[in-house]
Length: 175
Picture 1 (tube, rainbow, N blue to C red):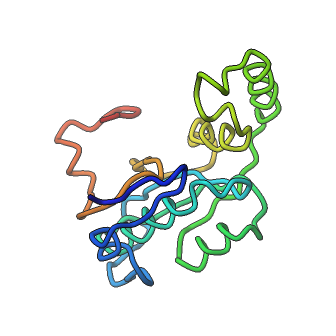
Picture 2: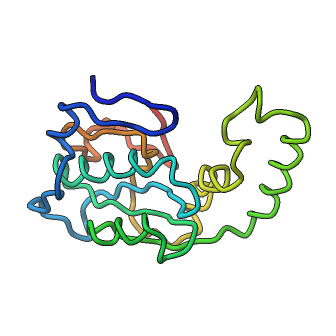
């Protein structure tokens, strides 16, 4: 397999280590015209750090994508510093709607949803990071197309806009 979950932490199998182990190769030409892969992360929860590292390393090793992280949290957080060292372009962003999410998570917890519902109800910062993607349109991207993907991804080969078919979406597409 490509990985296994131990609790909420991802461990890499040998196959994954061959793709994402060590320092990412930056041989691929990446420039302003390359397709950007945008993902979100927070410096306030460590549970996704291994998945972020696998995704970023595989993107650098196997694609010419330009990784861009929308990061919510302290720019000096361990994960922010690691992403910067890897060459990930960083957008530090605190959403205006954060307090509404805090209130929503508190209400969900009062109703016991953290026990039977989404694991995101257990950690308000994970919930905020999950919804950072809704601000993509407000962050100044000028590209005609960007690829948004969560961090639980392993890039095995090149990804280009042509992979999404001849008919381009007007606003967005999911698959």
